[in-house]
Amino acid sequence: MRYIYDNIITISLLGLLFAGCKKEFTGLSTNANEIFWVTNNDADMPVRVMGNTASKTIILIVHGGPGDGSYNYTDYKTARLREKYGVAFWDQRNAGSASGNNNMDELNLPQMINDMEVIVKALKLRYDGASIFLYAHSFGGLLAAGYLVKDSNQNNLKGWIEIDGAHNYPLCNASSRKMLMDTATSEISKGNYISQWQNILDYCSSHDPLSSYKISSQTETFAHNAEPYMGIKQKNSSLSLAEDPLDQLVNYYDLNHTSFGNDFLESLEIADYSNQLYKIKIPSLLLWGQFDFTVPPVLGEDGMRNLGSVYKKLVLFPHSGHHPMETDTDSVEDEIINFVDTFK
Amino acid sequence: MIGGSIPFHSIIKEKKDKDSKPRNSEKDEFFSAESGGYRYPFAYTSILVNAGIGIRYIKSAKHFTELSFNQGIVRTIYDGKVYELDQDGNIKESKLFGRNYLTTGFSYSLNWDLNNRKSNSWFFQLKPATWIQYPYNSFLKPHFSLQAGVSHRLKKHNSSYEDKVQP
Image (tube, rainbow over all chains, first blue to last red):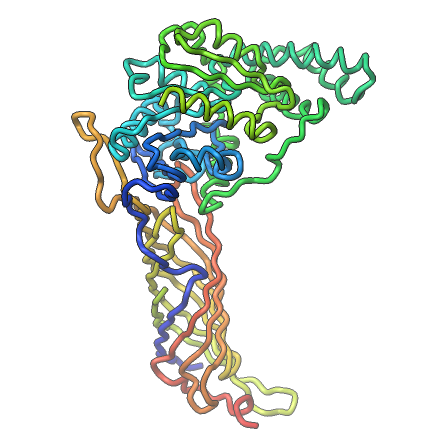
């Protein structure tokens, strides 16, 4: 046995090395593709801006989930919008590629509304003079409503588009259960997907989603499952990946499999802005899939009844469920373009 | 990545192969340090520094492997401008904003001699590694990487492997 002193130097290359330089804002463009970040209360949130920022009109995507991230809106679903306007894809805290150190205890709705206030301020600074619209889907509808009814936030915007937005969780849960039961009864009598609908009917008949988060969560699963039984072809089966896919996977795990995440999701069950929607005066466009069992069209009707806007319009898409921007893309974009061009 | 290692303990065992020829096998225990970085466009650039401890297994002059454990820090710097609120509630730009995280990882490297048989100083290296970054959003973020590069031995290896080296 003997000792050898032998030094080794290692130089290795990772699969991806430094390539290119930082993406700085270089001004308005008809084909922008740039990123900036907003750091607020321990969370760092990316905002990727794509499309025609030279139009001086920016549509801010307020994604659903919570926790979905905005990256899966960067495809065909917003292609025509990006040709005409700049579209800002914001990953909310603890979603998509948003990062930070110890911040899960800051994950709550008031904090997210505060984040949104900072995001809109940053957009206004960066795209000085631009008209800003919200495009809020599902949980994003709750978040956007919370933002709009607070203080004078709505004065920063020219209008908002709510797509199957859950601005009232209790109403959402109750109407989801009712719609599932009514449709199940009807479809069973027609002989369509009898065993599947019977399973849904049996569960919903004996479980009230307002009584616990667990039941609400299971009802939501049934609501997603029910769409194909009505002929709705869901296209969002593949996992959309952020620039660093592990960011999205870790955030998804955090939200759905940790006590912090579950506490947050459970806290949303009582969130309700219906009785404050009268405060919203800016133009409102409500787009809904007729077969959305997750956030039923009843929520859209609730918005029409309660919004204080002079201009408010509800459009139902007969071939869509919870994601009309996927299943009725052209029609949804037509409505949005007409709305934005009218009020920008 | 660039790094270095210094053995602090080596063990050489003499064995005889089937033909009764002497054959050495060596095991070095070493300290290591390395630094480097990686970048995800439209996301962030990370700069890593870590220190580790490991074992190098040398069974021939042409080839050796290493198993190591390391502990370090990583600094992320975001792509694009970073904005935050100032004390007056106005938006301001935060220059070179990023975050620090701890890292813990394991790696295994395979190294093949690139030189002639007399001078075993340059090696081609393949190094699969896994490490975690924490606290990341109050949890941890796993990483997997496959590094390819070269390693250089500053001092020629002075144990004998004639049975393997000579034709």
